Amino acid sequence: MKQILITIAIAGVLVSCKNTSENKKDADDSAVVETVENSTDQVETNYVPIDSDEALIAASLMAAPEASRDGCTIIGYNMAGDFVTLREGGNEFIVLADDPKKSGFNAACYHKSLEPFMARGRELRAEGKTGPEIFDIREEEAKSGKLDMGKPGSTLHIYYGESDLYNPKTNEVEGAQYRYVVYLPFATAESTGLPEKPVGPNHPWIMNPGTHRAHIMISPLPDKNKN
Image 1 (cartoon, helix red, strand yellow):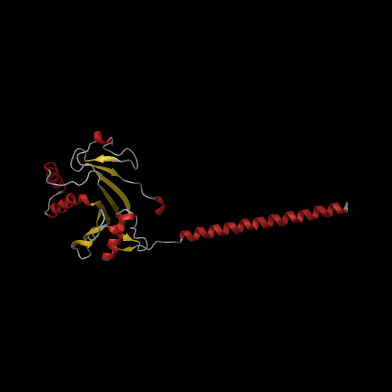
Image 2 (cartoon, helix red, strand yellow):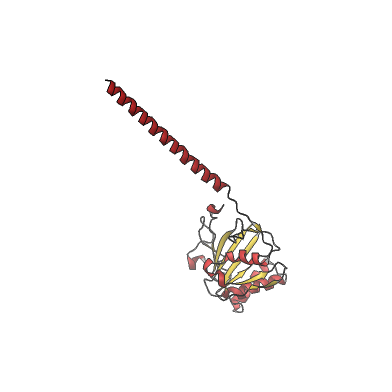
């Protein structure tokens, strides 16, 4: 009987030690997780103003496909307010840099075959023409063959946001998003099978159908992981 009582007592001690050890391990694991989570919460991105041509170029290049950024030609207003070629390039893309004098951020990257169309718009805008006037003039010139509209399917990539702050480590602009435009002059809903209005998030649709400026609009939803 005495031996049985001793055996029971020893077993109780062992179980108690095991439970204490497991509880301590659980507590240690929880502390590690909490520490990691707290450390993650404390990580902040240091966004800064775009205050140099170098920063302007780096941020504007985010509009271009990543694999093509090294070879893009970059044009636009520099920090001094002059419209210049900020960098010569040799591939199929032209980047139109953000205008430092305007609020927010808006850079674009387009296929070089669209340059006559884009340049004509800038020219007319410099003459003081309004948006509707520019549309009508280019519509007439495109229909007559005077204005080269580029290769059907040429794409415009837009990188835009309300902020003009960027991260020097990644060149990303705070809160910026992407939008894509695929030009198909004089295309319609019937010729493409696309709706004339978006039917849901991320859904492509055709804008300005039947005109020189007909294009497919694609507006991806923001990446929540970057917020």
